Image 1: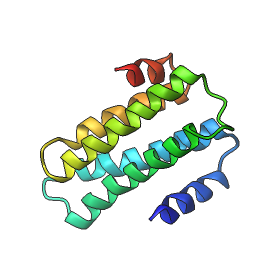
Image 2: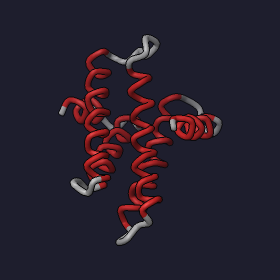
Image 3: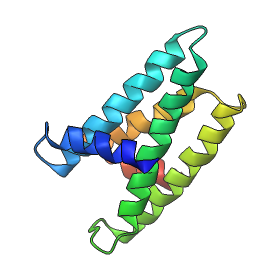
Image 4: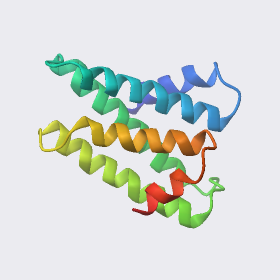
Length: 129
């Protein structure tokens, strides 16, 4: 299951220069897939579920990295991002069961992308919510 996410991560790694750019590119690709599915009135169920699954895998990989001893982020930011990853997981299951909208996941990813691109401290403020 995680092999696909790691494969995508590897493909992006070969096209970008640093970790922040890699993370941004992954978020951008997956968020674009979520937006494309969200824009369709009747998306194919397999494509719809795949977009959500890819997003969940990304967040799972990030969570794993955040608990790693090698991760040098501020401990408070790490805790907040781990809590946000758990929220993404819950929201994803709600989306899959049609109890929430894809727009919630898209919004979270876009805010993280703003933080990764250096547009303020969006990552920290969203993670703290």
